[in-house]
Image 1 (cartoon, rainbow, N blue to C red):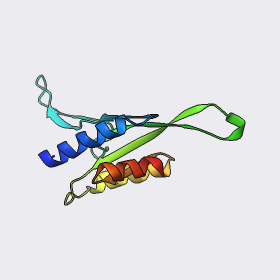
Image 2: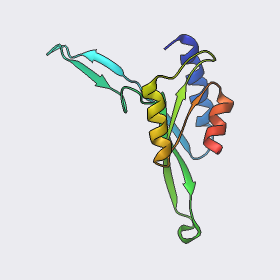
Image 3: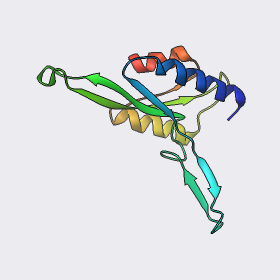
Length: 118
């Protein structure tokens, strides 16, 4: 990930962290060799393809459940103006959306806020 993308990701995480009912964490992902066995070990949620920021947005639901709050899984993939999502990243986002979660590719704090408020 480029420094520009890392900086943008941090700005988005900090800005969204100020909003009520939203919690996002950095999803560090990749792979490293196990020093004991030499085998490669993948890490991160849904690696490869898991979004950069994952967490939840808390919402209040239907009249028969007034006052009950639920957490909706949220995944934000951060890209610079010229960055491109991989097929695995696009598939992960589509999977989350189809399951009822909140997910998208963003290039700014404003885009991330829009995804969370739609």
